[in-house]
Length: 526
Image (tube, rainbow, N blue to C red; front, side, top):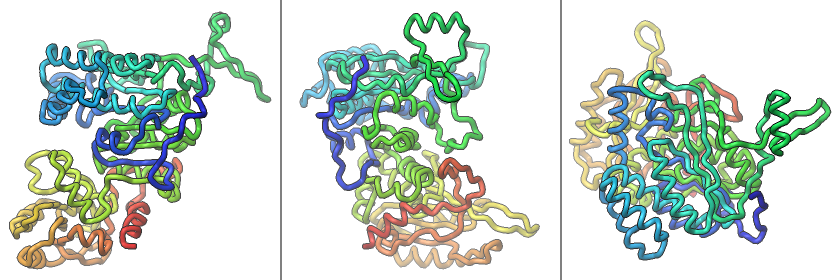
């Protein structure tokens, strides 16, 4: 059914003059705290299924790699306190959030699957999709991107949430892409699944915005014309024939040389999101991505004239999205983004550091490294045995042969209330590693006199390329970062992101001082 949205539905209200909202933190908390009932026109989510893996890599490899991927899933989705709490919330249904079929389904899956990683994943999705259903307008649409590993379970969950509330299952989209790693041991996978639902029987679908150009034989054209599926458009240069859109999309994955490639492990092509946003929303509508990752959904929504809401639990993603938006649309785009959940002062940093869950407390360390380095550092993702090193940055220097080579600056971040020189000694020990020339210790609370003395005794590092000299080991406090706008001024290389400003690639970019971060600190100081 193709119908226009009702004009009586109110648009989303934001907390400031900003048109768009970017939230850092758990999407469940942000959905419940900030996103109003029936305020979103379209939601697309690509939830994490396997740690640091794209969906189309899950089953393309064999042997040890398959086992490693399976273990990554178990590591990511544990039956832990969060899973138990979510399961109990669904079963108890104290606030009547969940349909009867949703409750019965989760109870049944618990009996069939057992309380393990898969059930943890499904509980996580169930609670969040229930909230997404709440925030969708009556004419709203929902797209969930997944792979065949869990799609059969997810379809049952979505039916229980949407259809039981008067919505409709619209279609199952098959996104087919070019080959990945091939094998002769099984059928080679080359597609993902995208489920599409509507909140009611009246929903937006702009078929003529996503017509498919076709090169067809005359007999095929006659069949399509007879079925009413062939559209012919004419202009000064002649006529072009299109077919109404189907549920099978061939869109290539992002290759290594593509200008839009950011190096983000689960990045999806802009063309994929363009199809969805054009078809299921209109200009001025609100588009939500509750797992926004590197920001493809919000970037495409911005380009197509939609308002948008993005949520992600990692500061790395928030940092990357701000960088991407600024360099794609220019500095003024930042004036239209309301940022929530990122520390704006010392108290905010302390609150982030004292989160109950380990993975959320780790966000303080990521924030400290990226914020202090103007997003030019790289996070150490190693879960254990990292030697207290939370991030690194690269600086170039000239060696004895007059060759240019990269050296490392290492970062250690601590939020402990009681600090001792032992932390500095640990960092000093890692500074003897090959290629390390400097160390920076970032602390939430003030260092002791002994720590400052230990750092000073390390002396200075002189860079032969720039002819500049720096303290070899520096101690920086979070108070200094906010109150004195203290930032990394050393000319380090940007390490992860690619210049995509206005679609132009710049592989020679060597610095990435974020205008957003400068504006952010200026606002804080004033």
